[in-house]
Amino acid sequence: MSRVERTDEELVGLVRARDERAFETLYGKYSDIVYSVSLRVLADPTLAQDVAQEVFLRFWRMPDSYDASRGRFMNWLLSVTRNRAVDEVRSRGRRRQREVAPAVMPEDPPDAHAEDPLHNAQLEAERSAVRNALRLLPEEQRTALELAYFGGLTQQEIAALLNQPLGTVKTRTRLAMKKLRLTLAGEVGVGL
Amino acid sequence: MTCQDFLDDIDLSALQTLEEGEDARLRAHAAGCEDCRTRLLASEAMVSTLGLTVSVARAPRALRSAVLDAVRAAPVAGSAQRSSPAPVPLSGGRSRRWASRYGSLAAALLVAPLAGSLLWNARLQGQVNDLKQLQRQVTELQQETAQIQRQNDGLVLFSVPSAIKADFQPVTESVAARGAATWSPDRNKCYVRFDQLPKPSDGQSYRLWYVVDNNRVVDAGVLNPDDEGRADATIDTSRWRGKAYEMVLRLEYRPSDAEAKALLTAILSRPQ
Ligand SMILES: [Zn+2]
Image (tube, rainbow over all chains, first blue to last red):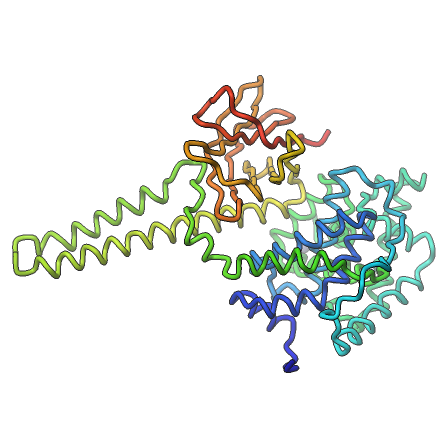
């Protein structure tokens, strides 16, 4: 296979021109992370697969829904996935299960198409930067942030769940975001 | 709201963790303030990187085949729509009427100066045929534009924080079709879309109904699925004042067919 490295934005341009291989490349790059985010929010492999499928197919049908002027493709894809999964949680009231950690399915053999060492190395570096930044947060701030992001809970719901005043929860979430921003500035490809 | 008020809650808005009313006020500020809009985008980008912190599970192979088979089945998104009749807009084919009106006008303008001359007959016939062809293309293009407009409406509505969303539930287990509705009371629109609708048999059509205040049942029009069983529509909801609406998709032989089966239903309720 020829290895012409194209940026995600170039691949998106090809997808707009209905290039299936470009779509397949993007799928190979991001299917694991999209599925994993969906699984983490929904804690249900079947639903997670449905949401991931919907996200990718909607992108194929409407590639213009991604607007490059608003940021990187991967950020957009992760946002769309998380928001779609949260909508699903909210509509199904499945919040109780959100703490369940996603299981790697051992019976599912690795997808050979997903291999791209260079891409994985970049993604890996970025992942570890964000994970480290999250690890540096005080426990209560990290919890507030994770309940909001992965649990899809509102600040009021988090306050009720943790039995804390709403103002306290909001302060913790704001501080968590502020620290993340400081730690990550310049490290990951987002305009901060 | 001042920019400072906005900045206090910008990250909470980006996390979509505010109550709807609070969030709507922030988004309204961002809509009118470019600086804050830019800041919100940056905050949303940072929020999205939180997704990277998950333990990565391998996507199932079934997902790969489901996605890529669907893509291969419809390699050129537009072509399937072009080759099949586009869904008739629920509001009644206004675009088609315009196309035919402008088409006839253009034909009349072209035809009139030439009509008297037999000599020109052959060329005239050719031009009329060209014009008819052009008219068909214009009609197709307008139908496609209407469909894209509806899909965009759907996307926009989907992203309105206060939008109310519901999935259509099958009435019996044998129904494989799926659907979703997104209603924005602020924008007075409801977008519905369906997937996997089986091709209706001759004489049958899909018709969407909704139950408005006082249990009045309103006909929202016919949906013509494309070759892949997809159909969508935008409904004007400016008269919806009630708390909840039930939408019903039925397969019927004629309007108000008493025997018609309901296939899918969805309930859209305003939040408490
Ligand atoms: Zn402002």
